[in-house]
Length: 345
Image 1 (tube, rainbow, N blue to C red):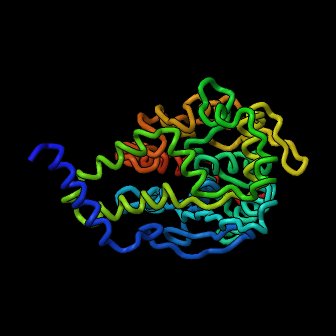
Image 2: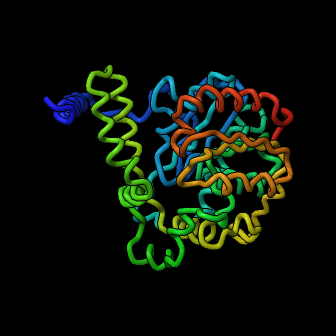
């Protein structure tokens, strides 16, 4: 038997075992439903009376990436670090919600969630943490309501998309997104997943599935984690058409946030209004959010800003072993010292 034949046999065995596993769940850490806004559910992880921290995930994917396994769960690590961790879990928008805009998500749901959490914690302001696109939403909230949050953490957040070599800005160039969503309605989750996979076809295609042969004799939990990752990659929600077009146009075509030209419901979003402590983490080999795009926030906000650059790619920032050994312990330590503990205003 050749080495290629043996590899194919291992691949077939791994695929067969995957087929016998139960349907993967959406996370591994128990959570409590803690509230609901118009377009999202609030889940709480950790003790109810600890220091509150609100996690704002991207609209484009589901938040399961932050809780793939017990060993690589961002939510579990933050809760274990002494925080009541709240996750804003967005509802997938149906066709009737195609006209939801960024104003609805930021001025509506996010603002309501921050106030709700402060109310549950005796007026204590929450820390705010945004992931990727969710970091842009969080930064906008902190700029518009700076007194409402204790600190701001950004993970892989595209702040300045005018930096050289930004792949999504290059992809967005020349597209009339308003006409696109006007004709097609809400962009589909599977369609967007295909676009993101095409940006790194070898690593997310051939290399990933050829490597599946190495899992032929892995334990069931390792295989289940692989399935949870597959589900996260390809089971993204549809996007509210108007918000999708706004984000693509204002953030990627106009670079309006970094240029100080972004407006929500007529109000200017000025990053320099952010005066709370900021923790800014990014990956040095990120193919979606180049380091320069994320680093730019340091020059825009007025609060003390700590950068944490990590070798590796976009996903490694959330599920990589080095991130969980270095980044998240550093973030937990920083959160304990960031911002005075005082009531929300």
